[in-house]
Image 1 (cartoon, rainbow, N blue to C red):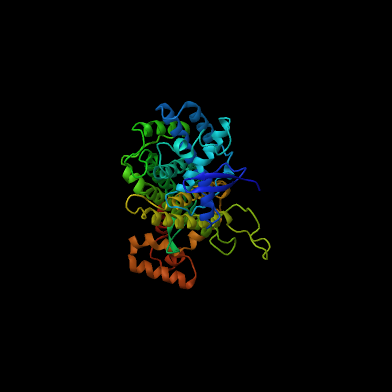
Image 2: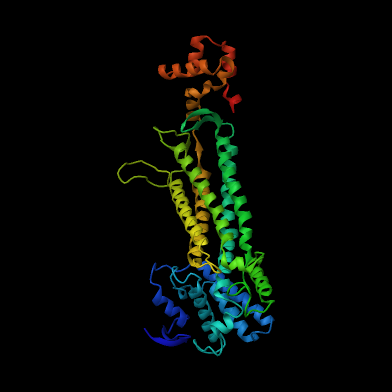
Length: 459
């Protein structure tokens, strides 16, 4: 491999000739050999979006000449378009401010800008990663800004549409199953009847409420601490820089961002991210409950509850022919568990804003974006490959209702709780239906029996 020599404030570093990154990135690659995993590309694109907005702002303010600014803008756009995805190799587990990644992006943009300006990579006189690309910025305000931008983009682009789709799928099943009476269960034991549609309405409402929480909490991510530089004072930054840059970011992303109300809080704390992650955690809890319920209701096909049948997607066993498993709900509960763990990590990281800077931002970015992607894909899969294809087993639902001892519940209004309980125990011991015991004991007339055991009135 051929190398070139680039220099940073600590001296010279060898860099692969074909690489667009420079000395600081090369130094970070030597220092952070931990996970072998880089930060998500969506996060890198968001950093590039900041650089593009900053270049526009600095040009308008006369702080960077138009040719250099134009080259920076074009180079940043190429990163956003995915043309340099292999140029951001720094490990997630790096300096807690994300300075290495900020400089990685600065160097790639600067070197590509040098080429666009007719020069060679490394010619800092044409375009300097700090003096031009990073002008008016600090890693301390760029990285949290990029966390907010990338998370908001993924939420509006992927997560919210996926949840709307899932909510609609559940609504359709709620309507389809509205007249199918089944037995309810509390403590996994027989309870009073409900309709299958009512049961699915509960699932739909969980997703609807989850969507509302996401929509409310994502607003906090639309506040950006850009312009605060190192601590929030805005040192080395033009007073109009942030507004101009954020306006440009809003225009390019289609999301209305604004400067954080308090830049010190925006840099030192990650409360908005932790709050948003809490909404993701609640959504994960909802998905796990729904997916587990679907597994239970589908259990069988002959020796379980079997009130519904999930779509058959693939063989379920390498040894038992004909076995089919609830693979999508199983994938969803694993996603839910992963997200809950990620949110716990984010909570710990969010509490590490010691004094004036949070120093766990890369791991926050990684876990947050990964969680949004997981939940988006899981919700889509659950809707398309599971919910949409569910079939109700009407005969099984009716059979279980007829045999349930919980049908004795409305009888308590006629004969009292204790006598009704005696009838329930008697039916259980004799292995007969509740109605049969009531008829045998003659406690009600035939007309009263039909009236009180009408399950349509119970739901």
